[in-house]
Length: 178
Ligand SMILES: [Fe+2]
Ligand SMILES: [Fe+2]
Image (cartoon, rainbow, N blue to C red; front, side):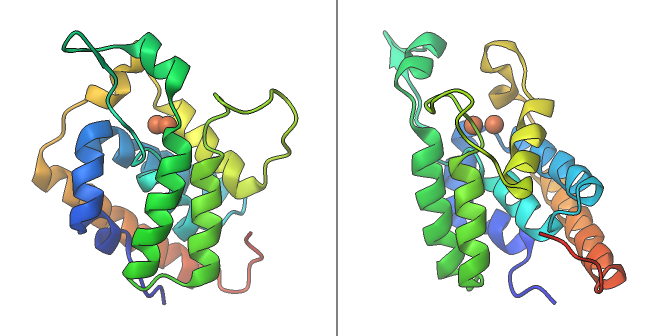
């Protein structure tokens, strides 16, 4: 049994505050993609969905003359570093297992390679899954951050994911997942 659910993570005020900046709809879609990809690649779906849900909580809004500037953001952004740190602090605070919190935080740190030397990193399967899930929901010009979702729909989708994760973990207790 997991001691922290996706719903615990999602409904926490810290998550809500930061996800409102980077887009709740994007975070949930990426968590859903991460669940599918985790099953396919024998990755722990609990870690993958938590990392996916929180992957963009480090976002800062880059404004130039009152307007969000995508180019400015791309040049100066360190949201994955900030997000990894915020996610780790939050997960530990709500009682997540320390090893899990570390794996999730590192997957968030590496979900984008925008500031990393190209081709020099060998990503672990969990990190690859989070990266692929994010790319699956990406839209041109960062539009995926502006998709809208109603609060009750968001919570419902999180609860469905929680049920699917529990079901998968129960069914696959002897299976080797990373
Ligand atoms: Fe991101
Ligand atoms: Fe993202």
